[in-house]
Image (cartoon, rainbow, N blue to C red; front, side):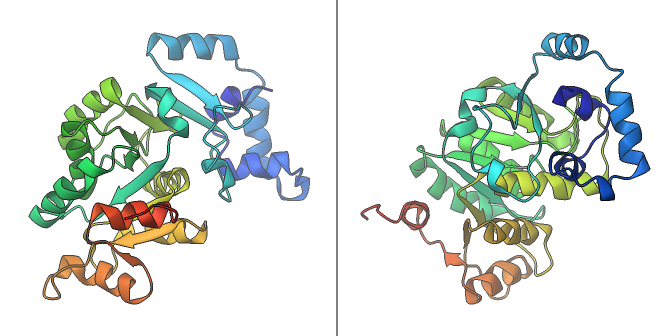
Length: 269
């Protein structure tokens, strides 16, 4: 059975993991129903429809699948791509932060990103730090990838739609869901694991103590990736999370050299 049909039938990454590891004892009736539905789908027809939308796919069984992403606990078994798929196996840096991130994040990334042309900047196309990471990358001709928490036919939030269009022209957007897949809260956590899974390391710019961007940082650390934070003003609520993580051992980033050396220990400053 082709993986695209499983995807259109709604089989999740964890369910696919159960199938491939032959954990029949934990296969629910719902999963069995999805597999039966998948067997009724025509993969050739589905691929033709994707081609009409200029969307390609890569599966976990193909050599082109990102090798770092394959290492995580529950990698997506299929990725839907729009843009330059050659970016998939470049070295990547995930950049995330608060949706409330402002001038400090922008000024910092305007200093850091132009010196990181060897990397592809990965983020989640949310407003705030994500959008800033993408736009600063585009302005400085640094390649960038946007990870979607929904299918390619959907977009959220509206404020980053134009940025996404530029990314799809000059970079790449990725979703693990078929194009028609709608917005659901749990999918945003799934998106975060892809950001961390693709990246050699994660940089958090600004984050409140309970910010979701710190979840992405934790995911990266759990997968033995580098965790980095911008130190911030101790009176700013947007720096409480990052400052605390630095105290706990995250790399404090004061320059692009700090990032490069963290990701490549052999780099000579």
